[in-house]
Image 1 (cartoon, rainbow, N blue to C red):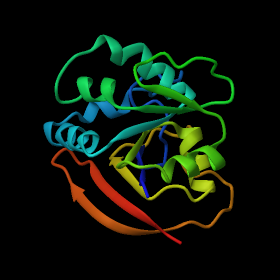
Image 2: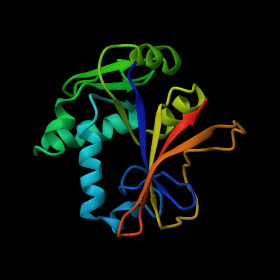
Image 3: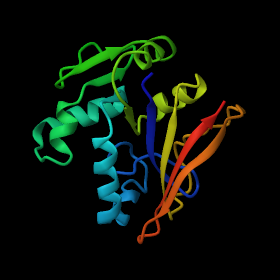
Length: 188
């Protein structure tokens, strides 16, 4: 069975919104770039190298599809462009980025995808999708890069849903820039 790995940039106050700056009109968008570091970049390259496919929500897919096809580079751009991409959306009509396929139902289609042949499936950002995957217990690993910044609110990975979810720490690492890597596995 394939593993679904969700990877998120997250602030101390639990916000995952607008780490790159232009995803939403958040007043503190781009908070992640202030902590660029070769070691965290190396981790992200290795993380992508360990994936056989991407699973993305509609907004992240559209943002990535508008950027990555015009990029080149053997460490990140080439692999992300070549990998199979599954986008979960009920409204998206076409997925034209190389190797892209639309899935309509999180619970049914993603559960079926996990049962196919292949390796790890990586979910970048995709907050709405990540929340749905958490709700349906479809995540096998949660990787958080915790940034030493508080941005006063915004979209969070864990809402006020009152769902109890337990996780066991698989691995942690502190980077020199103050960022913490926290890798968790759900306890079911």
